[in-house]
Amino acid sequence: MVAIHVLNGPNLNLLGQREPEVYGRLSLADIETRLRARAEVLAAAGGGAISLAFAQTNSEGELVTLVQNAGLAGAGVILNAGAYTHTSIALRDAISGSRALAIEVHLSNVHAREQFRHHSVIAAVAHGVIAGFGAAGYELALEAIVPLLRARTAAVEGVGNH
Ligand code: DQA
Image 1 (tube, rainbow, N blue to C red):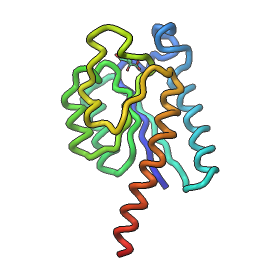
Image 2 (cartoon, helix red, strand yellow; image 1 turned 120 degrees about the vertical axis):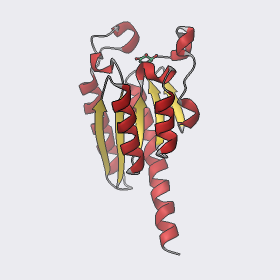
Image 3 (cartoon, rainbow, N blue to C red; image 1 turned 90 degrees about the vertical axis):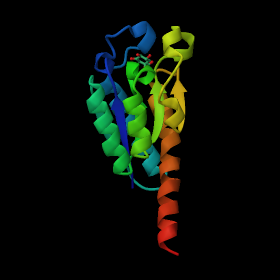
């Protein structure tokens, strides 16, 4: 079984109402429903169960704790850190310090927007970045992270067998 924590930062609780021309009309609950369905399809295709946990917070410290907990538990992280992406060294340190396998997600194409959104302080410690595909970006991240986590689990089990 692989475990994945889908963590959302500030203002993402407003999805659906917040600047829909930028972020789309789906709420975070809609995104969760879609991701759970996609996880079931991926699990049914073979390779073992996928457990998903969702959380959203507007607080930087809480997001740091959520990332730490996921990383230390060996869970993968799909992270949309919202504006903390551009500012939070603490969040970057939480990813590297807990060795979280993280994929950074943005609904919007941050590189096509204001200059201050072009730089991510967490991208260098993320496994990869997905931006500009709207809510589908979370599903793309799920598709990407599941084989990475399965490979990591297989490698750890392989070491135990020798
Ligand atoms: C965002 C992009 C950030 O720049 C912004 O602060 C957000 C949302 C996105 O999903 O496109 O809150 O992370």
